[in-house]
Image 1: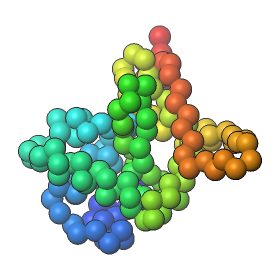
Image 2: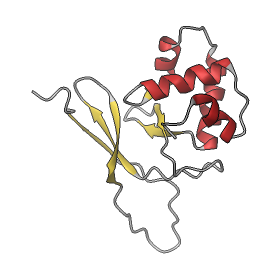
Image 3: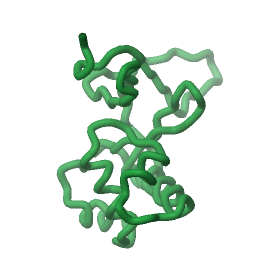
Image 4: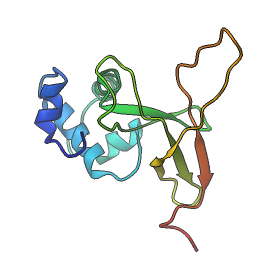
Length: 141
């Protein structure tokens, strides 16, 4: 999905091609790590209101364009999904997320698969989030 043009990603997901959607998706494609709602507010040249950004992010999550990443302070970060996610909200980004303690960038480590968690009978997992903290390879001393 990352290699497709922005207009094509939106059309493929049956979404109207609006300026706000294009600009927000462009930010995700340009940014190496995950973004918070506040990052998007700061990085867009246009002044989109908070509600427009929030609704756009929620739509992108529902369509499988981006996925959420929990943070220790109960905030939410967002990152681009890979091609395996579907428009029914079923995310298949079973990878580890890494948060750098030095630069605070959150990375999707696509090559590190989330380990299988064996739950007791009757429990059904919906999402398994694994977040690792430490020092990233850009900040390594």
